[in-house]
Length: 365
Image (tube, rainbow, N blue to C red; front, side, top):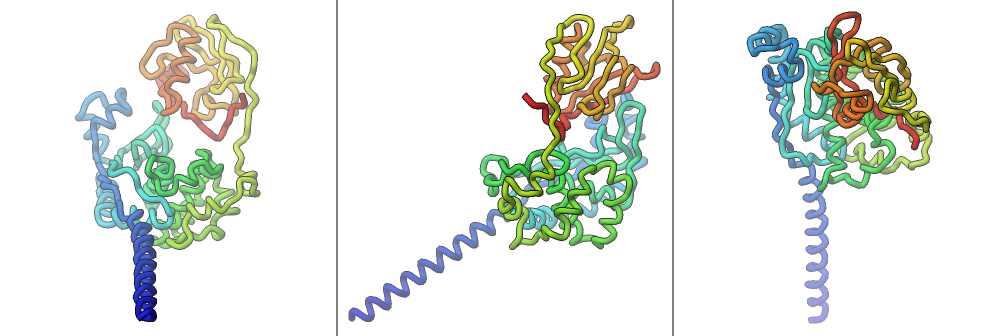
């Protein structure tokens, strides 16, 4: 009787243990079962008009502009409609990060002020456009690499959201949003996932081209320190690899962003200011035209890196006309987090630049 009781107890324990193990495995699987609803939207004319109101003053103009990308956009959308859910799931498995957002949209446009954006997720097919200056974007695999890259960036951000499955890596130095850290993790994830759908040799040939090297200055670290070493799989996820990397490792040290000492010199709301040592790196003076002329610019700071140049006349910031120099700088800094649009006159012609919070540059306190 006692032996039978022990046997029943042993069976009960084994059954309980098995259910726990199966339950854990099920929970782990469920972390990647929540795939967001993602729509790819072509020809959102209102969005295009909001981006470039001077170029597309009417819906008719926007419709005409979109006609030149119709075939390429439709091909990309067909691919997404067929493979989108699978891509979202596979990328999540490779990352070891679950999707928290229940849904979002992907906008396919002709032009955008940058090469792409992941919030709102925007893929330009024809060019990067600032004012009258357009940098052409190659076709072929480039839009697909851009798509996977922006998806990867969006997915990595899920780790920092409430309820994120990999919240424990959100504070790791390699998750810091700089070119050689966060961007390289996203590129690693994007390229390895894309390699499941295209020849990886073809993908890398495009990604190593001059166009992409200009877009991704951190490629040296990606290919010297990550590619071929961090091989992603559902068993060897990006989150696990990041968590295993010591904060004091050579990789963390190598990718540490440069620092620029912050000037302590005060400046007034008078004729000149602010000094070029600030975050923006510009000094301006009010011109006879009533606009603000850039008289000095630091080539290592945000304004120059975003396209502003000495001699430019600043007309408006986010559509507002600054009252004085201090008001100008306040407007710039208040909108900097999401990218601030600055309308300027350059060589007698109206143009625009968007000053982004380039986080490769850390301003020391």
